[in-house]
Amino acid sequence: MVLQTKEVVQQFGGLTAVNRVSMQIEDGQIVGLIGPNGAGKTTFFNVITGVNTPTAGSVHFMGEEITGIPAHEIVARGIARTFQNIRLFKNMTAQENVIAGMHTESQANLIDAIFRTKRHRTETLACEQKADELLELVGLYAYRYELATRLPYGHQRRLEIARALASSPKLLLLDEPAAGMNEQETADLLEFIRRLRGMGYTILLIEHDMKLVMSICENIYVLDHGELIAQGAPEEIQSNPRVIEAYLGKEG
Amino acid sequence: MNSIYQALAKRQGLVQILLLAAAAVFPLLVSNPYVIRLSILSGIFIILSLSLNLLTGFSGQISLGHIAFYGIGAYTAAILSKNFGLNFLLCMVAAIVVTALFGLLLGLPALKLGGYYLAIVTLGFSEIVRLVEINWMELTNGPLGINGIPKPALFGIKLSSPRAYYYMCLLLVVLTIVVIRNILESRIGYALGTIRGDENAAKFMGVNIFRYKIMAFMVSAGIAGLAGAFFAQYVTFIDPTSFASDQSTLVLIMVIFGGIGSLPGSVIGAVVLTLVPELLRSLMEYRMLIYGVVLVFMMLVRPEGLLGKINFKHIRQRCTAEPPDGKEGS
Image (cartoon, rainbow over all chains, first blue to last red; front, side, top):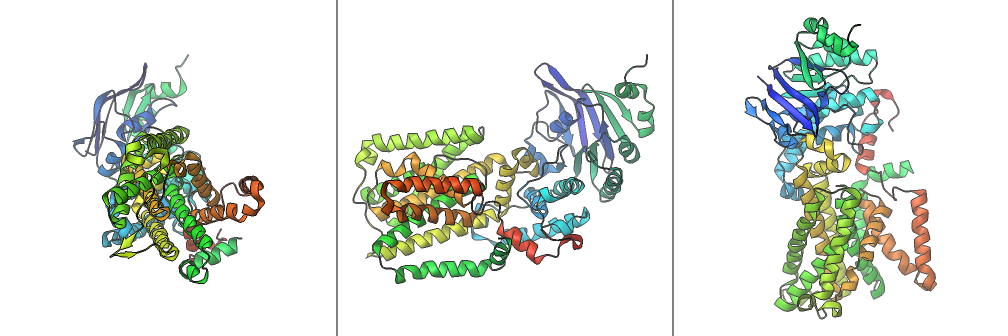
């Protein structure tokens, strides 16, 4: 099992944003997390990635407990994420953005940097090469020297994924990867996520685009008002009355 | 303008060698002690602006109290060499270590504060340092300052001619440039860049924000302390007026004038803003007015500074790579 959360609760003052959510993700799965706006999906992501320490409950990754560990250490353990609103580094080129994501992949310290030791030089070359490979993978190699902010929107989303992959994660968290994309771009993304699974990544994604979620995820969790209201295969979710109610409101 | 930048970027190595050669030959051609003195002063301000740019420009930590580190370095070197007869090289190393420790101290609040709040804390820090310099008579001799600081000597040879000081200063400038450039081009530079760009995203790159902010403060402070140590041994007399907060502002103006986040910009900013008030000296009381007008004009025409947002590495990469999909490279 890659990720397991047990009865995770996250309260902000009097508000319970996530209420006793348990989730299990097996190796190589693509799991979807859906729910209406404000259901607590991003908060749940924040708990897994170490932004917030949950009020109660635990998070286990690859058999080890990671509850309450700082975000940068969780990245080092193998969880990477993208953001709902793109958060690329504006002053950096596409290639530099990906290299920035490789922080946990190299070890050079201040002394290595100042004296340009062998370790520094070897790592720098390796990082550049790996960055170019990742840019090739997401189809942005030709744009590697462009400033990230100059890329079209769809490219920026893909660059964010490449940057997340740079830390060689086991689990990839995608927060609304198709947001703002047109149909063609969404279809390309779908293809791309399938390829990632083929490469051995395990993926958890938040998404509003139902077509994408239903066609790609093996297992779907539905949140509403912080609570898990359903879980199962796409067909089960589509016909689940509680899910329909959460999205469309009660009948009559 | 773009083609000039491209030409410079492509021949970066050559430009650097030519500039260095010019700087090395300069004191052999010019013997006017006033000019040499101004060059040395420019050199000190180059080191200060570069170190502040590392902190503010490349790591996004605004500091309005940078001169405090300069002062701490100067006093450390002055006291150690005068009272303990320490060799000037050891004084410089000690100044770096002591100021780096103060950098650590100032870096701690920076972990919780950002932007304007941090700026206020750094301003307060520099005022505290200045007050200590004025009031701790036993250590600093207060407002009277410390005079008769021994001049540097190596193996019994005094290095106190203007030319010797000039070359020592040039060496320190080159050293500072190399050290800061090497840091910025390493994974540490990338880590600092992520903190500057977006602190919330930085931690998801696996960057330990605590560690790198402290590192930026320590390295930046240490380099400013080195400049202070050199200054003390150059002028042989220091008092608290050299380290007042208007000097911090001056260094910050140099960084902004040259371009936040540009190393060549800091060098140009420091040289221009050291020389301009001197060149205008004949205009007497109007010179600060003109100086101010120049700065305001500059900020109106190029708010990002002379070389702000001009990244020679990016320009060079784009020149050499084929443009994407046959489109125009930009």
